[in-house]
Length: 70
Image (cartoon, rainbow, N blue to C red; front, side, top):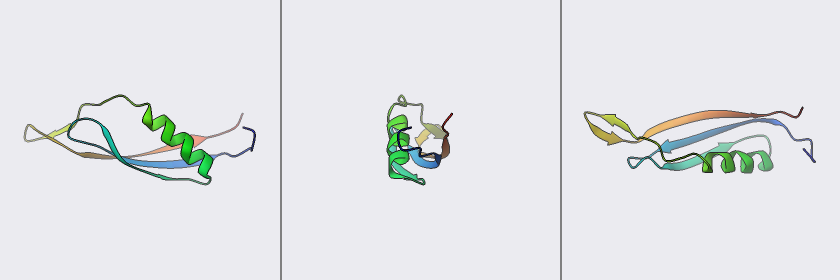
């Protein structure tokens, strides 16, 4: 808020076979927004991995996080 920076950060990550978040990639308009998006993604709990033919597999996700000042 101090710098007045806002915008959309695209977060790409993989949920591994054990359910942990791996390979986080961030793309946004400012480094400070990318760091905040990384902090948010870091807070996500362990998840249930995807399954294919009853075996756990990696699943890729892409999520936009919009930072807007109010």
